[in-house]
Image (tube, rainbow, N blue to C red; front, side):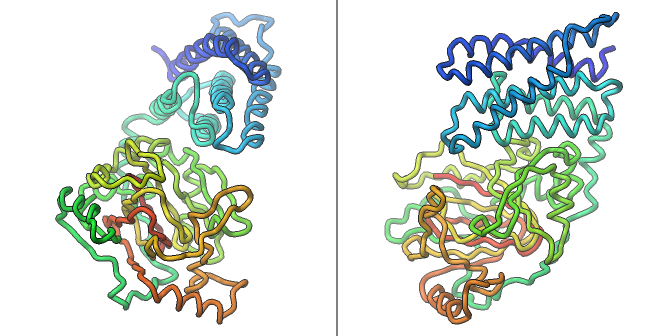
Length: 462
């Protein structure tokens, strides 16, 4: 009978042997001298791992092992360090693809070495699993999983690791355990919505044809709308409840999967930063900490569903994302909608900004406040900052203007004047509850604020 460890080692051995062949071919075609040298080094480490696998599984271990594990470990670490240094040498969107690929393949080989170095049963090696999952997720998140083995190899490996380490019956019990739910409290209250003339209209029973007529009306540009029945049948709202921390942990390998977290109130604030942390740590440290003194952590604008397909099965793309609408000419055509997750505690915000696409924002867990302004209003767009075009973000700090957040750099008179100016033109607002879908037409300025623990999914489409 093949043990779990033997099965995963066999899977990795085949991958390492394939990388030896593929990297050798890639090295010979490379026009980047540095990349060619690193490619050769990575290929040799892959070959060493194949040989080490043979030594580890040999019935009679050699008295003098051929592979020096200490040197192998150092070489793999060196390769990963060299590749990752290139992420800082280039602007991210200009990083040559071969460095993403080499970084990914090096991390894959490093996890093979980690597993080869582990002795004993594979059913409960918690530290090993934490290390391996962390490295594979780093390859997915930072480098897009750009392996020569194909983008799906890492996801298949993670599924295999999960299957071998967590018995099926235990996994089924964990996924069905949904008694505990996130708090629905709104600890900081909610904005005053007494001006009913500014409330986003709520709609239901719209056909796709009716939606297309609304979006294509030549006499009146589309305004925001809330649809209350678009996602009624989502498993995330019913049988697979995302409001259950236990369910989310069961879909993220016991909370081991890494997620990118924004640290700080807003991405335009001083001191704002980002970190990669295990999902379980994100829940415990940021989401379930309901304290005004706690540091704010937000899983924002991340394609969590490409990284973790198990969660993608709990939602469906709304039919309206396939509507025929005029193209802007300013942005590339999206062949399929772009999905992003937005998950965090009360008090997480997205500052006033615009999107380059139409947006259907679905509220899955908790409540969220949204303020919207039309694209023809001057919302004081920011300029270039540190070489980055920030013109899609407003210089107006709406939270500070409304008094929801501290405003040490704004006097009371300034705040009152800006607030008065903002209220004079067209603007809309709403509170989204679970199951609501907000249409944000392309180019509309919008500010978003979580009132409780909140999990939303945005669908960008054009």
